[in-house]
Amino acid sequence: MRPVGTTQDVVAAMSTWLRGTDEEALIVETSGSTGRPKRVRLSRHAVRASIAGTERRLGGAGRWLLALPATYVAGLQVIARSLAAGAEPVLLEEHASLAEAVATHRPEFVSLVPTQLHRLLDDPAQGEALRSFTTVLLGGGPIDPALRARAEAQGVRVVATYGSAETAGGCVYDGVALDGVALAVEVDGRLRIAGPTLFDGYDGDPALSAEVLVDGWFRTADAARIDEDGRLHVLGRLDDMVISGGVNVPAPRVAQRLREHPDVTDAEVLGVPDQEWGQRLVAFVVGTADLASLRDWVAQVHPRSWAPRQIVGLDALPLLDNGKPDRVTLRSLA
Image (cartoon, rainbow, N blue to C red):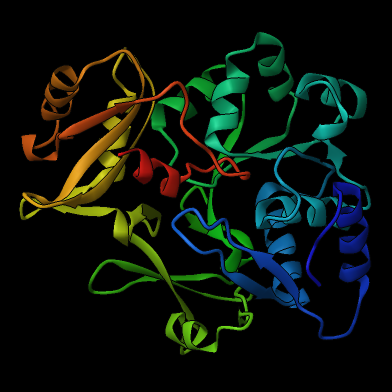
């Protein structure tokens, strides 16, 4: 089954599919944030295992508010979890605001991306509504510690999630894998994941499926480490490591530092081809800070070689439908 149509159509289709007993797979497209989207095949077993693991980790089932696109894995899991709890999800698109949806239906859980949480916290009424949720799942990309601290200071219970369409959505909550999910890090820092929530392969692409599914493990595109307490720390995508002038620069850590600048509202950092440097570190910044001040700001806590060599000023970062930065568009602006 491939979810199509209106959000209500997707909810109805998911309800039917979850009750089915045949071997029909759920086809979920990835976001395509770095290029061509992939079509991920998820079995009912994988989706149900994810639902059960999430319920155990969050302390029970409940009604969810759908604030994400219904056809991506995070939105589909919000629908599936709500249906498994015996209730249709509350659709944010049918209400004037999150606050109105919460006041009308009293959902217990919501899943957001960092950009959504940041904007909601700027509005006192929306922030008040966020406090009513048992849990706000936050995923879909790197989470700025300052954003999480700001939410928790306002009484919002945030749980950070890590996962992808290939793992049926979030499979690691606050650094701890769901029951039955195994994590390992390869010599080069690549994260591997195994367990009941894994996908069956990419629809129509057996070669890529064989490349990433090896001996029961999914070889992700992310670099990570696992600390002495067994908690996962995702360092960013392997291709987020920019080699500039022979120096390895972790772009997500530079972007995180830029977001801490008082004159920066938002930032993303990418590498683009450069004849002199091999790759030129480019910062895409929403704010008023100039290149010199931002280079100095980065160099206060990181090697100066990590400082961006170009800044592209924007009114807002271009986003995909699922709230992730549109890297293809960003690179074209550089």
